[in-house]
Amino acid sequence: MWWNMLLGNWLRNWKVPPNPHDHLHKYLTPEQLTEVYKRPRSSKAQVDLVISYMDTDKAIDDGLREQAYELFERSPPPESPSLLKSA
Image (cartoon, rainbow, N blue to C red; front, side, top):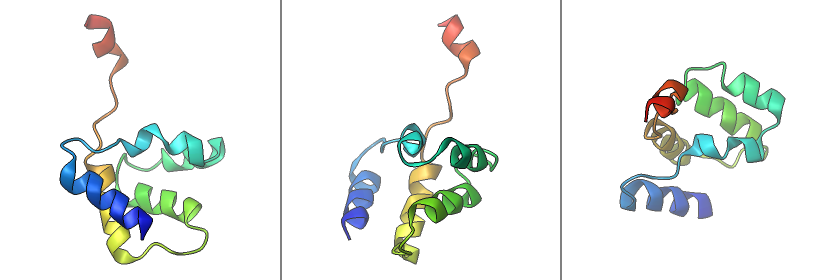
């Protein structure tokens, strides 16, 4: 329930919600991150893999999964190192 409220607040009330990609390293092993980033960025396949690693109790329902999909879909693309050099 707590995650549902938190995600709901981010998605409905924040112009730009937190970027989940900025936090994955805190919760996943380097090996898991490698597997996650083999999938297309912010795809349902990527989100489903993250959920499978983190939701060991199978507590995530369909509604919460849809919110996770939206959070990842709204995350900004990674910054290009070449763009940073030209700024």
